[in-house]
Image 1 (tube, rainbow, N blue to C red):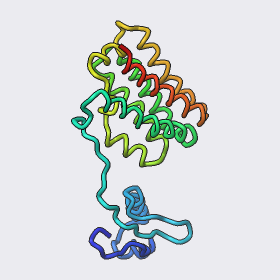
Image 2: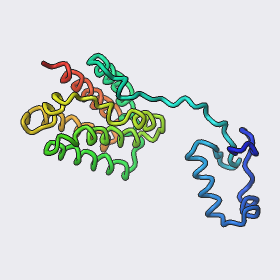
Image 3: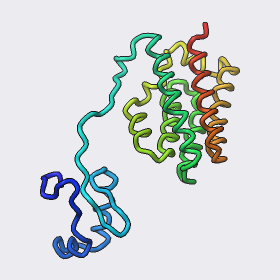
Image 4: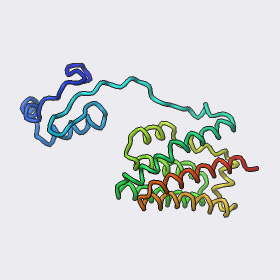
Length: 212
């Protein structure tokens, strides 16, 4: 397909044809088709077969950490995240699997432990939000957060120490409870509550960054 031998819109040969042509098992053929589906190169329709998709244009979204320079940029990043992640949380509540919920729970535990190791806090915070994006089961949410990476958390070092260390137990407890509330709503499969919990958490994060 990448070589252009099969054009977009054309149907892939049948399983039997591929088995005969390449001398492999049915399992190998099905695994290969699954990988093509995951890569967005083919789409399969029940009873009709698999069809080649056009290669997407190279328009990858990217925001480098160096582009987020000012305090205004940091606040704008949180505004952006509120819109994206609130909906991702709602979809995660509707679509998450038990395995994905377990991954969110593990990220939550790691985030709680970051109070003892503030240097790990940003990474742990990001992993919690990223696991929720994955649980939305829509690759555009997880692709977007993956492209942003931990820099999307964007806590200045002084604020990081203020929020995530045990020296300010009230702040740390509040942040922890916000994350736990997001997890509980997703576990309960309450989409509206999950959206609200994520929006509240990020709005509070924005307020904390503006606090003196």
